[in-house]
Length: 309
Ligand code: FES
Image (tube, rainbow, N blue to C red; front, side, top):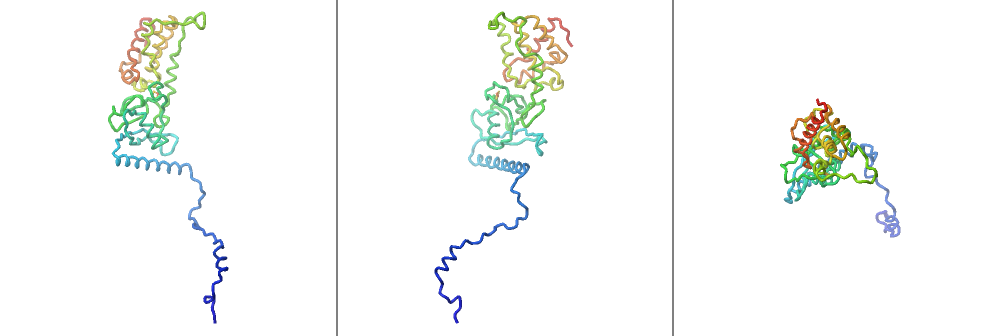
């Protein structure tokens, strides 16, 4: 009696079997957690944060293995709008050190290579715009003008003190600008020239007199360093008073306008608040003799016999 196993194989039947599509198999038939395929914002943020931390560690390890010289920067971090970041902290970044590297360069490297959420202001990168004033190793400085090689390490970078922090190294400058506005910082002569295109010429001596005061880039370093401004929110502050000086001393404006300007700086929260601590002068990145200018305005006010507080 013959059986199926004894039968001669039919080549056509075998070919038919080989060309049949095998039934689809489910490699993951019953996931234990339903997968919606979506990642919440919080999950994504935490995942990216973990990835960034890992990347930082790997890069630091690579740099150490390759014997690349790095500098450690400790950067103030704070974000009032993100859960888990509302408590200020410092993040450490190991940045490859290059000749001529500034604090701003190091921050840009850290942001671009390690943590794109790191937030700070900058623009010109050459000490002109004044947007990157920071508190570096305990002193107000422009990030773009401060060489890393001149600093003790680790380099600690914080936002300007006495200002409300918006995020990380960004502070709210609104009040600072309001104080600048309060001194009416624009050229406003008693008499306009007959022709709008006529030059209003200034003597060389008078130009020299106000030259240093015109260097101000409104970075806010001076006001941030001032203990009086820290304790008196209404104090005009060194930057605004310096701006007033620039116009009070400009003899093209005329006597009437000069008196009005002196009355502004003579107010209760004006020049008489200055205690000549010189901190503003010390930190000014443009070397403006701010304290001297404030004292000179005090003298001018007395000469004009205006009341003082
Ligand atoms: Fe403009 Fe530093 S970036 S002053």
